[in-house]
Length: 526
Image (cartoon, rainbow, N blue to C red; front, side, top):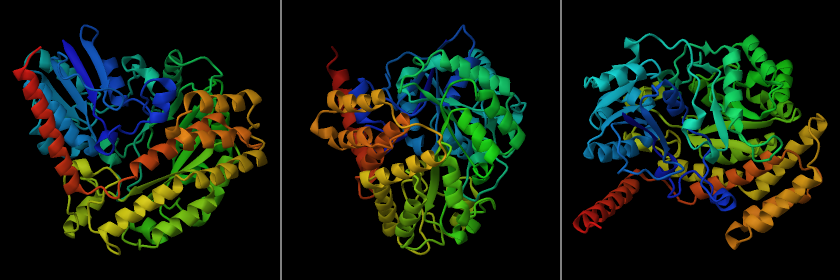
């Protein structure tokens, strides 16, 4: 049979072009996204060869709704839920059976069931083979609960060539799954659980080697790196050390995330650097001790340690990234300016700021809902950019506007240039990387002259010129990534707010226009 796996667009709920880069599209001649959906690559491996498995990522391509499919599988987060329902309706109208899984289906299974033939609740590796067998027999169940199947004990290797791998910046890789902590706002327990599973290290290395066969030539600046989708790479120290040691000779680059105590472990940081780590991000979450306590954040988050954590990573050539959340009950309107000053002092140019989001199924949602503070319950607005609850010490408008302002400040060329100079200074102190080669500097200039010569790309062109002529410039890939990230953040925050009511109005107009176009096409067939 013909199976269609679809990853609905996340970015197109917020931007017409989605979370993709027009600059890269201009330079490369095609749309790029950060990385493919790992679930789809795993399901591709689990699907028997007698079936045809087609992987579609709406972030980089349009969906052909006339594509014949027997079974359509959709994996969706809450922010993608409305789009998932729309896609499901289109294919069901054409006679295909549709199954929806993902974290939103796991939390809101009864709601999701109204829009599809079958719902997968929980991790799906052990469900997918049985679901396919049931479908072949014409016995597709309405619900498949992971608790009714043997627990996932061994991870499946992704089939990287199932997707259009040449249109991504990174290959997703997973070494561990689960997180033992219980942050109030976190929904990991619904996607990965609290139980911490560790793959055999030889399996992780094998997956990297398989993906490397699809990668570009060694030495090219645009080779794909790997992104560890693990929630926390530093739960079991010995495992972490052994993993990074095994990766040291693979000649790859990678990015990941973990808790702050990772960067305090000098031995582990050195192993990270030797294994090709480009950047590592932490959930700093807040500069307010009261907010950290409120969210039940692990004790490893000590605000006075933030500076040492950043410096220790960056002197080894690893860019420190930080996740910050705005809108805790302890936050007042001054939190945005204070966070900007604090992050500026830290000198990190990869500061990811989101709004506190009470995802359905979390302790935060239950608490706020019990207090009558959640005013928007449609899953599509749970995207970390839209305020869905009433803050305690500021208005919704103040929170949304302050959040937008902070992101814009962190994406200005002035801020990023200052932060990059701090990064290069830290690297120089650690003697961890040489300055850019002449060939790399010439390449930055060439990209500016021949690929980004239009007026529309002036900001990107100026940034690359600055880096090309800066005497201390280091780390070519981080320079390019910083340019792209600034572009995406700037585009994302052009709108003053993400008002749910306005979003629904625009969505209704788009649906009406689409229906008129379809009716016209049916009335006047070619």
